[in-house]
Length: 126
Image (tube, rainbow, N blue to C red; front, side, top):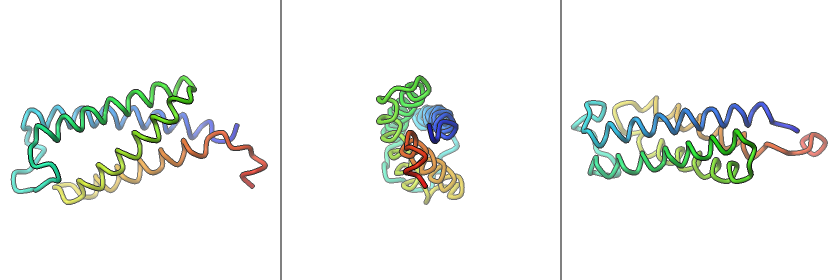
């Protein structure tokens, strides 16, 4: 099938994004120093931001593990998790690390594209 290597890469990146979002969520719940005090976020309360990031990370981890096993559920949850991750990265561009947010956005877009392209017949792709 076309895109098998890309979907394995996408699943690995989904797992990585999920772990990073869970770490950032725990950092937001703990009021860590990675969130600069003078920066304004869409969600003003760091506790709310932390729980949103933890839930997003769990969705991405679920999608990554299911995508690794080859389930259709993994494709659907992977597309949803990657899209939500891209939106979250765009919402955090105004923070202290805008280039990191743009890199996360580009990675999420590549993951979603890799999952969507997976399984097309090679004759239709040309």
